Amino acid sequence: MNESLVNTKATPGRILQIRRDFPVLERQIHDKPLVYLDNAASTQMPRQVIETVSAYHTYHHSNVHRGVHQLSQEATDLYEGAREKVRAFIGASSVKEIIFTSGTTDAINLVANSWGNRNIGRDDIILISNMEHHANIVPWYMLAKRTGAKIEVIPVLDDGSLDMDQFAALVRKPNVKVVCVNHVSNALGSVNPVEQICQICRERDICTVIDGAQAIGHFQIDVNQLGADFYAFSGHKMHGPTGIGILYGREELLQEMDPYKGGGDMILSVSFDHISWNELPYKFEAGTPAIAQAVGLGAAVDYLNGLDRTYLAKYEDELLAYATKRLGEVPGMRLIGTAPQKVSLNSFVIKGVHPHDIGSILDGEGVAVRTGQHCAEPVMDRFCIPATTRASMSIYNTFEEIDMLTEALLKVTELFDVND
Amino acid sequence: MLTTNRSKNLYQEVILDHNKSPRNYREIENFTHFAKGHNPLCGDKLDVYLLVDDAQTVQDVSFVGDGCAISKASASIMTTIVKGKSIEEAKALFTGFHDMATGKAEPSDDPKLRRLQVFAGVRDLPARVKCATLAWHTLDAALKDKDEVSTE
Image (cartoon, rainbow over all chains, first blue to last red; front, top):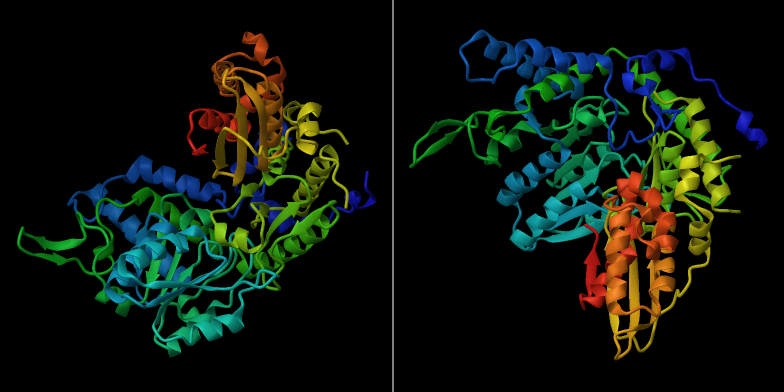
């Protein structure tokens, strides 16, 4: 065995304590302990969230906003309570700025349709970074097709950082109306200078749409400090349920916008001649919402608030540094995305082995990673690769799990006879 | 360092060998049938070329493309098996292989599929079935004069 394989760094007790909150981490996969490193796709839920969702279904379930009975009032209180929790969690000024959506994708579609239809016209420019998830590309592409607007791309440097010089040049072009950038890249792990981007855009009266899906689970967000016009994220990337997400929008902009979807609860009065829209945020929440999921998201906020997030962000940085060092020992390894500012995520290719083969073999070792294009085909093209293997870490991952990942990868290189 | 039985079962020596040295990995200049195959899940792309004579016999068959070990080995083995077969036999092989890979038929059901039994391991891995069948779907598309096929 390689000498370095015994160089295990011990995981602190605080993290081991957090692990006990996550029942799934006790599972065995193919008779091996689960090493869950697919957190960029979906984070696991702690017992506290699972139990809150279960209690909602067991004792409080009803429809919200409409019923005069006790259960409906309880469900409404829990649902609106979750909204307030999210508001405080991201530092928004008012619950009017917190719109429940089905996820980040739905939130961005809302902006592209509602704000976009009103504000984007022929010859306008939509600036999108080259490292966006399809969720922050496709709705804009569809808008551009509808309106005749142009999409221009902010390039990415070789290390996976956003090319800020090019951004500064592109943003000066007349007719740039909106800039769409992720806070953290799901394919590269790069943390983008969103505060700086938003400031530059604000000075030029350009709208900013920030995909925060990959940031929200890793560090504290303050939308006022960032200065974003819109900020979108998903519950399941921050230890909450799937099917729930948030669109934060600056109230002034949301007030001007028309509803995106029509239905019950988003209107004040309806006749066949005239409809008046409900007030914010209900104007954008047509139909029965994902109540249990929203309540679960509120519980995830409570859970994260109960942890020392500054400590956890520092711990994840150490985990990333350790993973980067250990992966460097694997023959044929090339990291894709080595920006100075990164979350705890490593995307990589191994010479001569397709990521899907890596993923299958790792699965056999109990190690769950993501392989493929990560719904970010343009950035794969940028780096001239068809796909990567992505090991993405969270607050409960350990140094020992990084060792297990490394050992599993060495088995891949042994099977495929990979040499440096 | 030993890999698990599961990985060994999926990545048998013959698959690793065909992955490393794919057979008939080339274009056929005077081909009579051609199709492009695409697996959007993993981005695998491969082209299949066929030269079929007047007697409806596959005189030559080849492929070009990138993909995982399973898809590359499957394409390579496919070319060695289909060469010399009639179109009808090739189509029957596709059906037989597809049924085996998707678990509709047992690997031992058809003696003609003996050499393809190395891919039986994908039956427990739904995500990898498409990798194993991509080349065959592409072959089927070429024989049906479809230019493109996607596993989605």
